[in-house]
Image 1 (cartoon, helix red, strand yellow):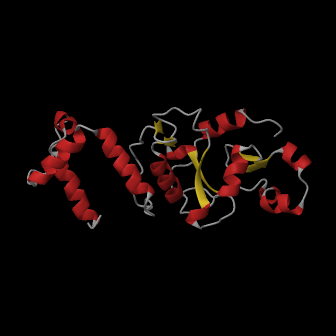
Image 2: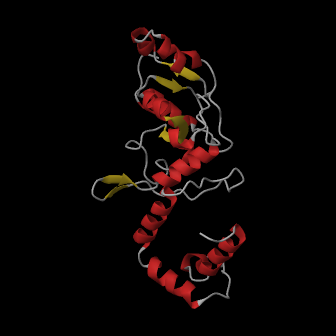
Length: 215
């Protein structure tokens, strides 16, 4: 954005003086700003959908992730399907950025640390999650590589509420190759690498596991 963190923080305080929600709580923003601040506020305050979409595009097109010293109490954006030419998930850029940052850009199973090979996997599926409190909640996420993300969704493996890895009995009976052992079975009983913050929700894990069989 061409601004250092302090300048960006001050700019947000400039906008704070226009926010009626802050005013109702007795919070005042900085009083000395430019006319452009007022113009930007007026433009986007009346069209928050556009503002949100612009922010989503900016985050999705960048490699910026939250650092470990970022605030831990986040305002979680509501997760809804947005109809464009297809269907996209609002808040996914936030979810990915927050989850990958919490796990230090490292797969919690294999230790792979190449961001382009990593995904933020939902523990409780997107479709089953509450839009306001669960879909984009980083405690509903695991940082996994593409392969293990798909395997987790398919029930080939899961984790228990002590964060230990469990492999499906059905999968072990069906697949006996060295490849299956190397990618999955050898991790059984081991604990995932836990994030620096936003520990996986045990409630979400219990829900996920309630949908599985043969464990």
